[in-house]
Length: 176
Image (cartoon, rainbow, N blue to C red):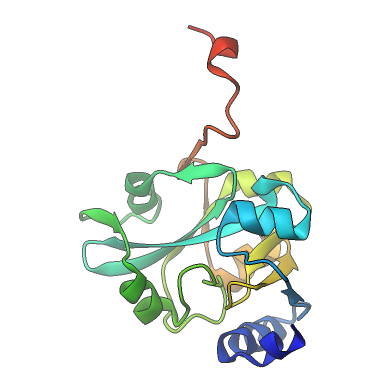
């Protein structure tokens, strides 16, 4: 698995981490980390400690949303948080690769091909350490929310997510 560290995408992430004076520790996983659930299982951490890197188009502009693994992104709120106007949609796989240089499932928040406006889910602050994709579906890197904010220039938002069904209390426990 150490040959994954030679992957060009992973090398870009390591270079970006080094340039930001951050630890360059990349974890290589036997199982894929292409989804938040798979990553949390492979790492052995809480689902919410996984950073999902989601690429959207707002009008014709690519943007990046960094969202906790146990939350669901609200696309329209991403545009509002970034003060952008236009229709919002999730980028298609080819568009993700074009905008970031990474394949879906391995999109890192650093080392991306283009500087993208970025918004960061405030709920990630529940964790001392979080894990983000490191440019390959079998690679992640540990970091802090503050370091992610600094490295990406992200705006921190309370409103870009809704609790997912996995994180929400059962329907019977909700107040009517």
